[in-house]
Image (cartoon, rainbow, N blue to C red; front, side, top):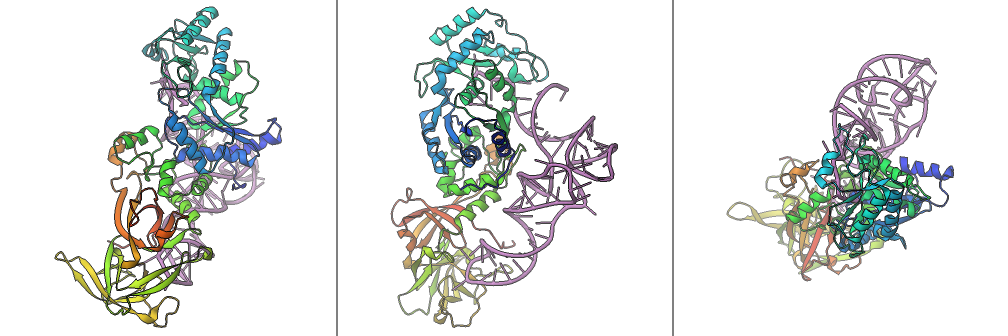
Length: 552
RNA sequence: UGGGGUGUGGCCAAGCGGUAAGGCAACGGGCUUUGAACCCGUCAUUCGCAGGUUCGAAUCCUGCCACCCCAGCCA
């Protein structure tokens, strides 16, 4: 399942640590999501890294929810995140943990810091704290409460826990250095008072530990050998280390940072993604245009394609913006050899076959041009068929290889037809085409000697079922959307619905929702959304590569 | 102008002092009853810039420059 030729600076580090016996047991990693939103493809990179490394080195991985802020977290996200990690193809087995599992121990460690005179209770208001922190270029100033006695701090902290103070009135702060050039080391807040119920601990606690205090301790308690996180936490590493150095704990994981995934025409910001949902730009977190795992799933993207993508983008510390072409490539690549082919038309144009005598001719076609295991399906050819509007032109652009007046074209897996005449409406648009077919040109036994320039797909009227085809395009119209301007840069053409037809045989397939509609793209049948048997709903997973573009 | 991180082709990314891997994209050709897939081939005299060390530098040293992150009682 994994590619052991993958080498990146983190895997190199892990290898070295094993070789030089720097870790006693096996490799331990963790994926630590906060249950306050849905997982996106950026998280997938981290999931593949953490679970991938454990798998490659015979280690284990924890799925640990970082649930230290009851104000923004909820059980619903816990459920959704587990579903998405599983779907991506990873198994944490029995190792499902929550930072909140460790609240009692975390509290004890906090008391320990106080007893060692390494933390103090601070009464500064939010605004006062902000002002005393200084700025990027000015040092901060000591809190007037910094010199309280250990006893007073301990008593105050216990009263905080007991609920004697209102939300936000006091904090527990580390006693480090207000003049530190790294702002994170300027006596950071370790605990804050929040009178709110927590999705797991209910109202047991009214003080909640901050990320910086929690994360390192949880990593240590779980014996994490390599604590992998994204670059923006690099500035927090000194604090991660400080906490573990100043409490009595026997394990100290190294924090290693890598750059987060950037994807062109997308954003990974939970805030912006949420705005898109809230303001109805998209139908929800699982809208097929969203870079969320649930959105990709709904679009029909196989999890293996996402894993392949994550392996291909690599792991470094460089800022990156991956082109969407790479993701599309990975998707097509994993679908290519196993996905059934079928014919569909998006914008039906009726073609009347004037010289057909039988009501219908039964034909056979393979479900896949190369993969014979997929078998064959039957289709019919009859008096009225539909082709795509794009495949017919009165005045064709140069190099057009489809149907034109007086011209020939092959109908895929059927016959060669010749356009005899067209019917147009008052605007001049073609509403119907009259054609004759060459009986001797049947696919597989063509003796006609005719050489049409191209081949197009078709659906015979009485062999087709209605299909709603949802085509998706990039979420934003610019490669690097600006967070502040997401409304303007949202791509209004990112979702287009077509009402067309697919051949009947597709309807009977129940073991695989993925199809390639020849010449159109890979589509995903939504069993959930099909309102009835005559109205199938498909989402376009990814279009086919365009080998030819008409010049306008 | 404090601290941290990063600069190799259009986008990723190897490279770890011995003379620029690979993938995606693009472009040319072959094959083709999907303008798909597949197959061949082309695509960095040069590694942010300037100096220096060395027989030899993308790799070592010095100095510049550019970009990203940090001033939540978010993670």
